[in-house]
Image (cartoon, rainbow, N blue to C red; front, side):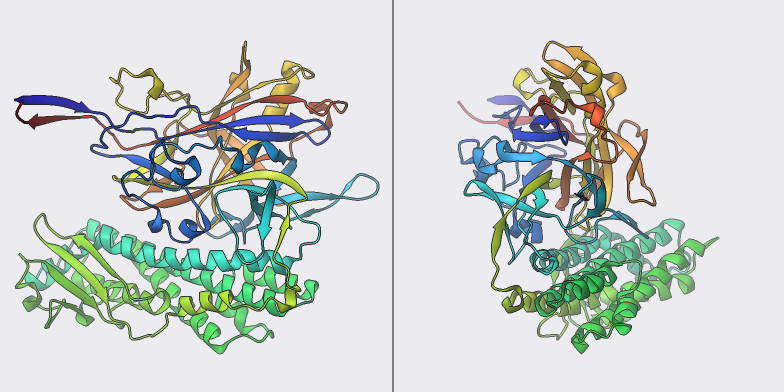
Length: 617
């Protein structure tokens, strides 16, 4: 018989509910997390689906390792396991996350201005105040680390930085060397994987159009092209520049980690770390001016990267200056930098830059990128040989393979060196518990099967098709609601206005900032309610984060490339630059408590599908 069935799918897949409890003397918060919705009844993701996973140190280094096996994210499984696989909800109520043991004191996001945007240099997410004997602030220190809850404490390990649900805090006997070494070991792996992943995604996303461009020239003899072709070359160059940036960040982490294991003097090490962290100065220039002994290979790799970055930047600049009708004479030199068709084989015998290469255009092909066939191929020297597929036409696939003879890729050598770093200079120190906590970090991965933008959903919206009849799928939106026995409404509003939520990408760049719109607060029986929105922000010369105008509805947190995992770290903290003593009572331990709810959405137009099924009784 014929059956017609409507298949619902997840449109807005994440709700994080954070129970917040604020204390008086420093206006700090105790947090516990509880999900708003469980048992999402999602049958099929049709025409687009947004998914989320909680990261671990393993999947932070390479989010392609996130599990997708059927049943991995089943509700019946242990939440701490299912949260690590792709799904629609992250459930954080389990006491093993330690959120009921977390306290937040006022702090400042540890941002530095760079050419690409405001970025945290390293893995020290927050700056905290160090006070003198007179009670005044002596200095804002960035000596903070983050740790996962283990055995009734937030525990920090020197061998590597761990990721997931993290408390951000301080450890009194922790040296800068120990902090950097733990961070460097994990971040170097992450940046290496990101460099390789970016190159593969470049081929996957731009490969079909590039093949059409080469086909139009070498098969059909086309001489004049379009602005869209220029935009394609520019986008490919921009993506390549991102891969090169990841590679350079790996080298920076390698240098820092090696120095941390060799330099015992803290002052000497901190001076070196500040120089290496400065991404505004080319790494090759920094190394060439340093007296510290480093491997000649690292200096050579840094020089190579600087040269490749300049070539890529020149391509982007040249694309921006092309006017009129683009000709092949103008485009070929730019393409050669990225993908040199005269040095890449299509099939077994013919270079891509020949008419003969397209004789098998109707069959699947292998594109072999030789080491000298452009920067996309040269990246194999740094991150390793790769193989990736893209669909050229509806019936023809292309597999891209590199053939670099380098036995151990440069970045892999850096990672291996960090793994073998001596602990002798660190006194055999392995782990310690946080003394005091200041913030919360949540390491998340998102993916969507359509190119789209990740949005902060402020108003409550259904997770499935709007025609769904299941109220349990209703999302609550993004908001905060607080109550207090000792504070009046105005004090509540003032303190709520200092809570910040920052979204960091996997290069530690601040891509978006959220705060409460307290001007729209409502007094409810359950407490004072205010919605969360994204806001413009800028970094002042003092290092304080200045919040500007509210961003428009639908403004993106970040872009999601089709079927490609995107890492975001969500940081929650109290903006110490905005807190005043008058905001809270100094006589009570507990000043206010309530709920923070985060909900995310995709900008993709996701619709339900009418799927006819034919069967027999």
